[in-house]
Image 1: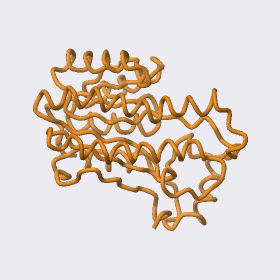
Image 2: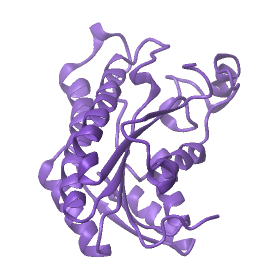
Image 3: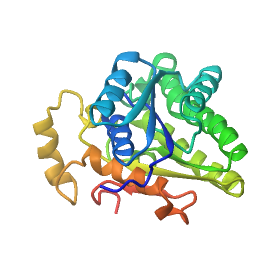
Image 4: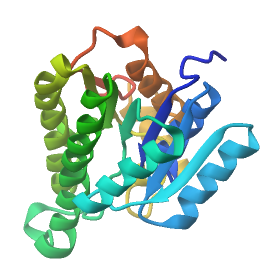
Length: 254
């Protein structure tokens, strides 16, 4: 294990479970002080405790990325706690609408996904960039999905649309702010071993069987593999990567 992020402060939104938790743990293991953000206290506090049990430094902060005032407070708390904001990983997202377009509930499902998946990323970048460009620069990695540009199954139109927007936002923001010293990229996972990748009524064993045939690599991705990609994109090793959308899907979109 290296210590690429010793002395840095990393913010991870949606850090209470799944990919977000894996990312937070990975940064802490490489020396970063980590702020774990999410809407619900218990999961993010558990992530922070796991980091501390391993000897790392972490703080859990409840925040709603779809609310500008909440994001402003989140950034202020991060800087007040650890003195800086060097890396931000905007991972918060929801998949709360499954089914064909004709059946999508535009109020409860569609607007919720837009608020969190799209507006949340926009607001997070807005306030993260404002701090970073005033304090010597930084790095932002947005977590999107290959479903944003390579849709292979029905029933995910709303989610796919929001993730396509995340990728477009990232590319535009990357060009807007690279001369400000802020480098912005996207990591887009395919099927990963989290609750979100299960089809309705599907078990983990069923998912494994499905992907054995459906994925060129023959398996589901691991949270740790996504975390490793995010750390790479946030590190000086990827200093020439600007506006990149890095796909991690075992060859599905090849």
